[in-house]
Length: 316
Length: 133
Image (cartoon, rainbow over all chains, first blue to last red; front, side, top):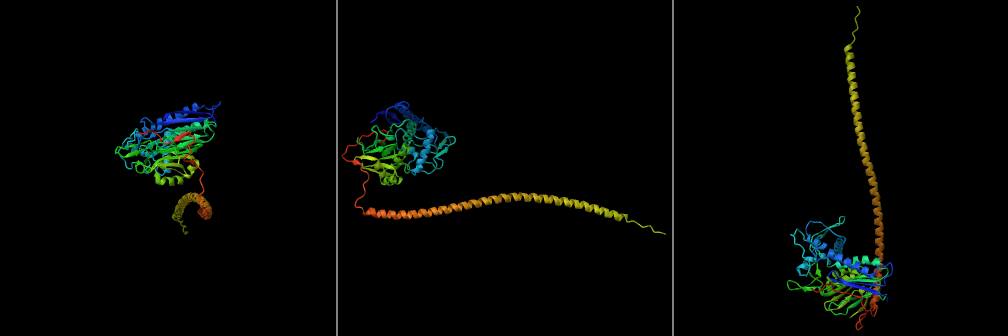
């Protein structure tokens, strides 16, 4: 069994933790140096993509949404918008970043309300097929028809970009980077076996519902266990909004976990599958060939065949 | 008395004048014909160039049509092959379906330890993010 270094802090409103296995050798980046780079990446992503800060690049872009003003985007902001657009198309509209006004309307705490502008024709709101994003790749400029939410993709992208900085410096060591339930892993755990990740019980018990083996790859969970509240009209609400209705979606589900090779896509698919609801999630996940675990409202854990291959333990 | 022979000088003058006028007319007509011929030649040269371009274009289009026809034939052949393969695959699937329905029990998926056993060591937990509002 090799040594492991562990670091933790808070970033993007969630705990951030890094574990690195193996001892530091000459010529290899020390674990605390890797940690500093991970923290820096998350700090930059928060400063650029946060929906909770009016001074973030995305906050300022959302402030100009609906106008004819072009906005010069950073590489990260441009990458986020491009991936969000691609994810919307790949999930056939189940993932849609234009749910920000719906979240604000439902009273999600902390979000910056987008500026209201007089309607000019089609609004380009969630679920609409109208182009919501105008891109000028040559000059890296963008223009939005409506404000967007980075909540469905921000941490996944931060993990992806942090991984791109860390992975070339691992030199055979294993690492696991965890950001509020979204996880990216490289190599093996201190015992030489793949990393073992617990799937949280959304019912609130300390025991995981399942334990999953994770080699090089990522795993992400969308759950309503924490982010739920009572809307201004008295109805229960949560943060996973169905773009087709503008209302909280995922009937009959409490949590969905997806494992893929990339943390950003793991986050996209966990949300998109959650919004399929308990009746359709199995068919959709199998049709897409995804390794997915889902917990129904009554606490029942179900999984796809490819998820079963990665599961080394389940509670029931 | 010898009559003096009168020379018809005025006739000679008229003949000379006519010859001169004829010569001038002939020269003018020849010049006009030459100019007309040059214009026709120039126009024909333009048409010939256009015809050459048309001929080359036509040859290229004919080549492309021929290539497209070849591609279409290849695609058609591949499509027929794929159809045959699908028919064969469907027949094999039907056979497998019959074999599977004859089994007394379904084959087991890889075993997952569960139930009363304690959860193994975990290095991280994936779950809900954020704090409860």
